[in-house]
Length: 497
Image (cartoon, rainbow, N blue to C red; front, side, top):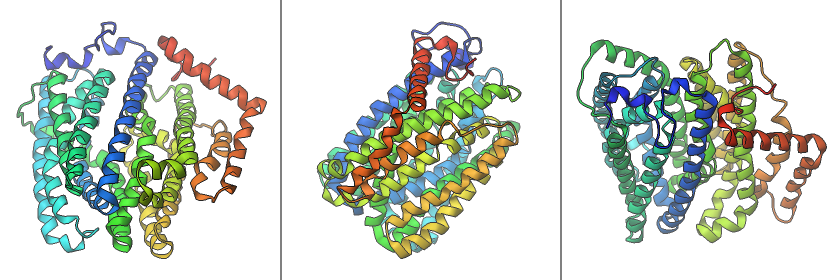
């Protein structure tokens, strides 16, 4: 393998040689986006099959216990990781072997310290944790944090060279490891422990496989200046990530308090459906972070185009599959997962609608991250966290499980904050996405309306037949086609003449 100092400029197999900086940003973005979409689409199938098998076997209560434990662990892992992969990705110039070693050293210290402190807190505050039954699985899952965190340097090395083909293979392998472990154990009656074991298998695969394939040979390298820089970056970058992860704790703490482990399981199941169907969002964040970082702040036209077109494409990539699944969900979910899971369908609809409507804000926060505006993103995330926590406490207590979904719609107030921050840098418009919100929002809510009245929600789709909407469809199809067939033009990132 090449020395680690050369890893960032190493081309993927089958790609033209030469430094990444000398290739077209559009070419890299489209090729990387193709790998990400392909990986996420295949991963969606694997995860869907895995979830179908596991949740049928373990039921809502056991799934709620595992999901609650995993939510707490992800918060601690995010604290321990301190945004180190973004720190490495955003470094200018060549990233040498010692940079990766210093990041590895930093993460080894933070992950071990975070694990020890978190384990201690489970004994000090265990009586406050919800849902009931989460404590022992949580203590076991906390031991996975160092493995979870320490693959960040290898991930950064691969992503700096737009190595999304390799990342796609690694992450697909992780999905397989998770469910190849969890499904047999679920068949054997392991309940929540099946997914605990699968979680360990998943994280171990990602750590070992990324380390081997990245070309890095990570070792201890303590540098006080480097550690100080990573700490400062982590405190500013990770505060937003911490706020986002704290949002995930609302389900176990609030829903778990009022509705128990089964309620947590229903919400977690709805979240899993939304996350699985919204596979394009994960790829958009990772690709957007790298691509937007390479567009200068003075290139207003390119930035405006990226925000507007990115918001539209993200909205469509979310809304179309959400709507299709929503229409079929009342028949599909009981057939695949079992009738006991139909209770989660209203929550799915509300969460899907909130995710779809938040597409523009998602692109805007990705842009803010690419500009290093970490504290601005923290403010946006804090508004979302506060809105969800307050809304959930009030609504879940008074109207039950569906109150959690309504509370998520209240979190869209954070779009106002993100919009205000971005507009201080340049102006942009929502006129391209508003017609699609009108057309696609009603079908997403299909499971909320009794039959046969639910079919009335499909009526707005007829608006696509109007000449302006037909023209927009042709433009979008042509844009994607030209980008995939001629990626050197970079059509997805460049304003049209």
